[in-house]
Structure formats: structure tokens, C-alpha cells
Image 1 (cartoon, helix red, strand yellow):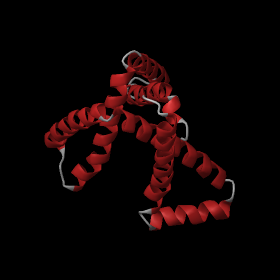
Image 2 (tube, helix red, strand yellow):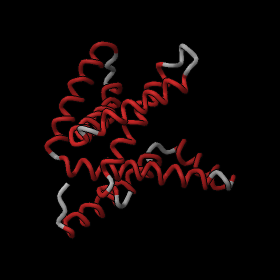
Image 3 (cartoon, rainbow, N blue to C red):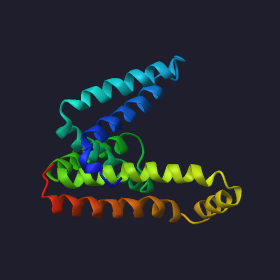
Image 4 (cartoon, one colour):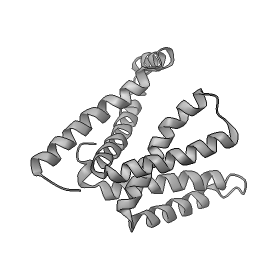
Length: 173
């Protein structure tokens, strides 16, 4: 989360590996070989993203941007072909913007991935204490702002730290 810009290539490959594993697992549900499909899908997508990693980070930024906007599209009542067409255009547009702003996208993606890992680890620690986990679960279910807040705050803090570190070292991604 803090040093993501230094190992961003590995983070991008791992992210595509996870995406490939999820897609492979979904495709393997019908045949019953879900684990094999997940391993193959994750391995193939991870290896394919290694060579053009500069382009892969832009595609990952486009996918993340489209995923964020997909919630808005569903809120507008779009479904079916209209949703898929608008989603495709959104992926292309967000990928183009991510390609033009690659350094900022690397910082945001690594900050987001680190934030998710940090919060999942803290959630696991909270599960040890039933009282803490119960109150946390109640807050998340009663107030819709708590979960996004728990993810956004570390992302923003990590992004600012990484950008200041890049400027301090005058590094170029």
C-alpha cells in the first residue's frame, strides 16, 4: 500500500492473475473443474499481462473505472444490451484516460490493492473479538458510508504518500 509504485509491475500481473482466476472459476462452474479452470485462467492472464505491462496497467485502470461506473449505470436502470454497450465504451474511455495518466493510475491502483489487503487483514483480526466484529458488522449494515469510508481513507493516504515519495526521489514510472 505504501511502496506500491516501486513494485507496480508485479501488482499489475497479480491483479490480472486474480481476474483470470475469477473468470476461470466462473467458466468452470458448469463442468465441475472449477479449480483447474481458475488456475489456468489466472496463469494465462497473468503471463499475458507481463510482457506489455505498460499497456496492461492502462487496461486495469480502465476495468476499474468501468467497474466503478457500472454501479451508476445499474442505478439508472440500464440492463441488457444497453448496459453492455455503455460498459464497453466506458472501458475504452477509462483505458484511454489511464494510458494518458499512467503514473497516477499506478499510484491509485497500488494504493487500492494495498487498502483492500490491509482492510481484509484487519477484518480477520476483528473476527477474533465477537464484540468488536458485531459492532463493526452492525455499523456496516446500518450505515452505507462506513464500508466505502474504510476503503477510501487508506487509498487516499497511500496515494498522497506515494506521490510525495515519487516527487521526492524524482522517479519516473
